[in-house]
Structure formats: C-alpha cells, structure tokens
Length: 336
Image 1 (cartoon, rainbow, N blue to C red):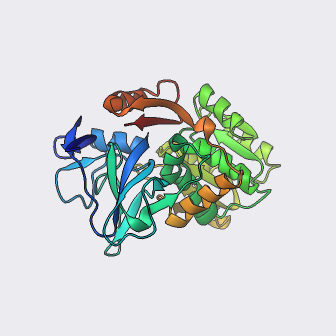
Image 2 (cartoon, rainbow, N blue to C red; image 1 turned 120 degrees about the vertical axis):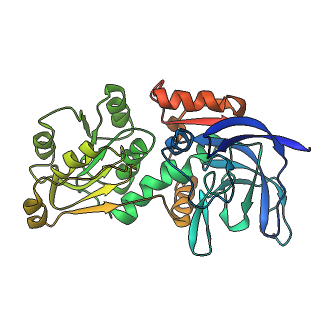
C-alpha cells in the first residue's frame, strides 16, 4: 500500500481535491488508524471557502476532518496501550508546546483512508457504538456538552434557550434534557429545524423571526426569563435577541463563530440584572471521554444524528449539500 486517498485543501488557493497521497506512517508515540467514518462540519466548509484559516499549519496543504473514528492499524514505536483492531475515535486536537492544534486544520485530519494520531488522543469506543456515530462525538456533541456543563453550568429545572437547531444546536437540546434543564426552548427560523428540535427533546420551539419572541420566552418560563441561552448559529442578530430573553443572572454562551460585533442595546438593564456574555470554543479531552461513557451506559443515543453517509470520493458533494442545507442535515459522514 504505497498511496491512499485523502481530501486535501490548499489553504493558499482554497483548492480542495480528493487525491492519492503517500500512506502515512506512525512515528514514536503515534498510532496509525484505519478511518471508518469522518464527519463533515461547517468548520470544514469555512476552511474551504476561506472564512477560516489555520493558525499553526506549517505548510500550505492539509487533509481535512476533525471528527474521526476507526480501527487501530499499527502502533508506532513505544506505544503500549493500543493494539491492531481496537475501535477508537480521535480527539479533535492535541496540545503542542502549550497551544492546542486542531486536527484537520493545523495538521492532517481524517478525510482519508488512514490517519496518524498521537497516542493520548485515542479514545476506545464500545462495540455497540457505530463508527458513524462515534466520529461526531468530538465537536458536534462535545462542543455543546462543554458549553452546557463547563461554560454555562446549566442546572436542573432552570430555563434554557437554544438558538440554531443545526448540527450543534440539536445536540445542545438533547444534552440540556440530559442534565435536566427545563423548560428547553429552541429558536430557529426554519420550520423543519424547529420540528427536529422538538424531536430531540425541546419543550417548545419558536421562530427567530417572531417579533414577540422575548415575550413568548417569558411566558414559557413563568416570567423568569432564561437562566442560560446558547447561540449555536453565530449570527449577531441572534445574540442581541437572546440577551433580551435572559432573566436575572442569566448567561448567554457564544458557541457559533462570527467576526461580527455584539451589541447590547440596554447596557443598564444588563448590568442591573447581573447578566453575562461568555465565549466558548470546542471542548476538552475529558468531555469526549464523558460522552463515550454516557453512550456506554445507555444514557445517550446518536442514531438520529447521522443524516447521510457518502464515500470519501464524494467529499465535495457532502460540502455542497451542507452549504445548501439540503435535507436539513445534522451531520453528514464520509466513509473511505
């Protein structure tokens, strides 16, 4: 096996191509993984369209894909924990010299037949967890989980709102229900997305186009407003709307990414009610491990999260589908 297929992006020209590359080899402390499934994230799309640019990538070209699951193919020198045949997922990044490098952004990811990973970034997965579902746990699930449990510190029986019921948002709804937040209010302009949010566990769902939304939210919460609001959309207007729905001491957590400014129209009320705006990015290794254990114990099921599976050779089609929101997908999966 001299060469393998990989989805490669030139970050200078933004040219993306699935092409033959030399088969990667694991170095000391690394593991070669045969990829069985890789998620297609909006971040991948933004890398291709130029909205995002790698911070640490040493060259001009990278194999995309930070949501990856597969089977150990070959342990490198000095690796003792992992053996061929073990089912694993890969953490979405690793720390190097005090900074976090993101897989598929700053170094080669999993849109490929094989991927190399540092030994500590592998997480064993149970036999009953399909690779397609395991692959999306890092990021699509772990990012909202970290936002809910670590940044917002969401509490049982406290009102929570989710703006944007896409790939991150619907998992946010599912996970808020797991921690006992109530009521859970989903907000999205698309009727299909609102219906999906209800299916994933939201108590009610409203359109962000509704001019009476803050009043409706207060009605659903007995006048209290939201203890926690999550922007998974990365839209400035969403953030301003969510602030108006917060209750005293309420927290707005910014998960969706945007380079646009945030405006708080009534700063006096915001200060008087001691509200907060908190930035959030990604997750820690522990969050992925927690989620795998919750799946192992039967607390979580991600079978509804896989909206379609395409061969690696159709990676560009998967990107186009996500851009068009064709079928309103939660996550599309590439299978080498």
